[in-house]
Amino acid sequence: GENVEQHPSTLSVQEGDSAVIKCTYSDSASNYFPWYKQELGKGPQLIIDIRSNVGEKKDQRIAVTLNKTAKHFSLHITETQPEDSAVYFCAPPGGSNYKLTFGKGTLLTVNP
Amino acid sequence: SQTIHQWPATLVQPVGSPLSLECTVEGTSNPNLYWYRQAAGRGLQLLFYSVGIGQISSEVPQNLSASRPQDRQFILSSKKLLLSDSGFYLCAWSVGLQGGYTFGSGTRLTVV
Image (cartoon, rainbow over all chains, first blue to last red; front, top):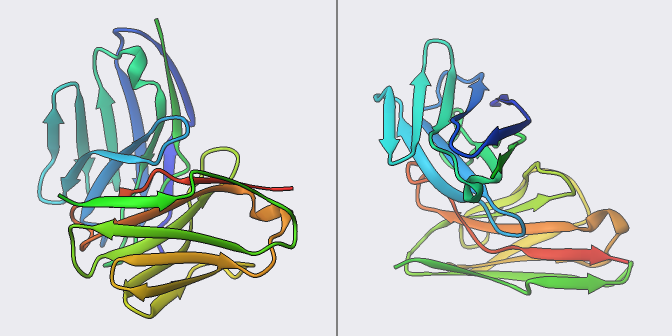
């Protein structure tokens, strides 16, 4: 099965700074790389994803980069705002057609 | 558009009582359906998933069971709750994995 590690487990930044969260995975069959954001008391929401034939994808202040050779992908948030404070999860599928494997999460705190 | 409904939002149940949590999906056919539990802290533990009516895959042996009586209905049950069943229960759906999961708003279960 897929082994997923996320780093760091907690991250505190000042408003306006950038934040980077890294996800490493073990199964080279993974071909889809999503990031989820979970606000307190709510279900996780997909915020950005990337397919294995693409190295980088941007959506306004967030971006995901993929290094398939090294088996890791990263979430980049620029110009952070207090509303970016949440837990972020990566969730590659490994070789499964049905299941995503979630990392343990990164608690991001943006201090005003 | 697709929507997912999960209820109740919060539930307090005594030890030994039964449990039934329901999840329904609208706007899509033959979705993959999932039940996750999130204990205190951040990890998402996959409990069950279903790729069709009557088809249930169990990920972790435990005090819970799942059923899918209709295409867009997924039910999580227990005959006798344990204290360790407390947590945040999340239902999710997907059609394939290349669009990720869509999560419900969750049920906060406290067993007392």
